[in-house]
Length: 113
Image (tube, rainbow, N blue to C red; front, side, top):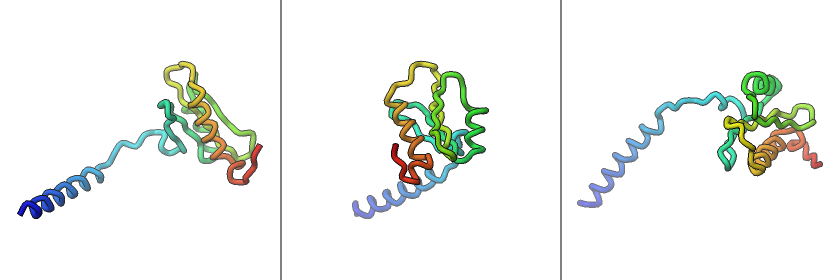
């Protein structure tokens, strides 16, 4: 008897969990770009194409943000957002730079330098 009750309660819980996961969430403005959050909670955004690169620089780059770009044709622009205008920790800069290299043509063409 207790087993049947537990199974029924589990099924009810599954149904409510499925309803909760189907709720729409707010989409943030940066989700149309390539992005991630560093381990020190800085937002890093990269363009997926030339148009997005231009939009990132002209519209979303603010004073205090860090701009990263590989010197290769077709490389994406990466911006490390710094809303507090404090000094950005080296670990976050390194993570953003790794993100830039991984999204550049040098990564896809196996160019190491």
